[in-house]
Length: 553
Image 1 (tube, rainbow, N blue to C red):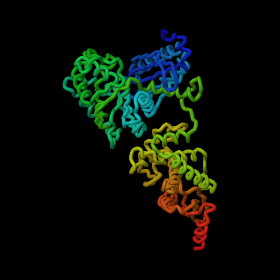
Image 2: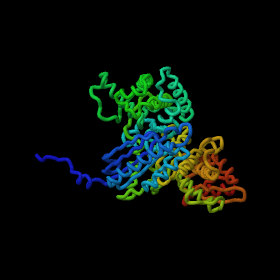
Image 3: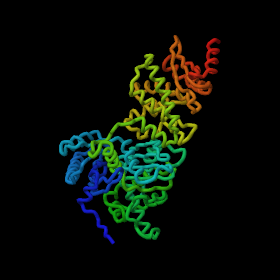
């Protein structure tokens, strides 16, 4: 019998694709992860370091980072960069979240890191932070078969993602973080409980303001960040002590907790002075003064979302960063060159539509009708046609009906949210917003400043949305039967109108009616009413005879 031995370090080095590192500069701590990449989406952690600096301390009131906190944090970053370099990493990415993002002097941290390390500290937006956390969760759990909410609670902010069958519908960003709340209200260890009640009232109001109550409650909340992992550690220790679990699990990932247990821990901990809290198994000294505010955020989010089950994820933003870096390796080869690759935009739209159950042929046909109209109107000099706007229209046409996966009656509104948060290759956040808004107006209401999503656009993008939505409404109407009845469109200009000749083997009465019903926005936008006429396909003799009679009339 042949004995199998563990691979040597040299053999492991030969097997790895690359060695990558990510540093997350947070409000409470600064963390480094170094991994050996084994393949697409897979890696082995070889180092994981954390330094508590409380970079965000004192910002709740002043809105600026303290000099001492900046210096301590930059020193920590320098140390972690040196550790990464000593491990001969092939790629290193540094990100900063709420503390640097929200502080008026946050740029100073970025500048000092560049001066002392030569590295770029990337200050990511809250929505990017949410996407990274969701990416990590989606890699660890199957989120494609159920409706879930993902929450990432940091020291300075909280991000929430609501997904349906693996498709992101909403991303919420809240100015709630464990350190930020502690700075404002204290550690919630006063005997009377006044601090706790003040935190609860404040968190409740912020959650109500920022998070929409879902029509259908997610089945589960999946949490990332130190508040969640600390809660899981406390829960697992208590389960072992009380006999609810025979053995204490070795990993936190996947541990489930009910909402009533969270409220139990909140009440028990808030009765203890901070110095005694460290005696609770699973609760470390770095979390003792901020754990109660963090638990309140979890409780109020679960209440708002209508969720009773919490599942804990032991990774998060840094994991999401590593997965993005691995994606970049896959696109660029063996060397990591950074995020933001742009290829095959239409292909990713088709792929996303297919995930939502949309028929590819139908999506492509409507997109072909829309881009044909766009091209012909551009040649008629009704507007300045550009390849970029044409691509936005094409993608909006492909994705217009993805909201069916949520609900039919309001699918155009659901399409907006799904597209807004979709991973569309080559499209930045502004372009996704335009695509989503065009799709949102492919039926029913026209664009108006009373709609939040339209009002949020800048004036140029509003004009772009009106123009593209007007065209998409016609194309969607001309494919009203979803049977691709209209094969081709020719636009013939007249003095005071546009004649749309719709070429089809037989009269597409329903499609002509569908287009005419949606012509109001087109007429308002281009100041020309469209008229829709059937032109029989070449070789259709009966149709040609009928067409000649119609002209004789």
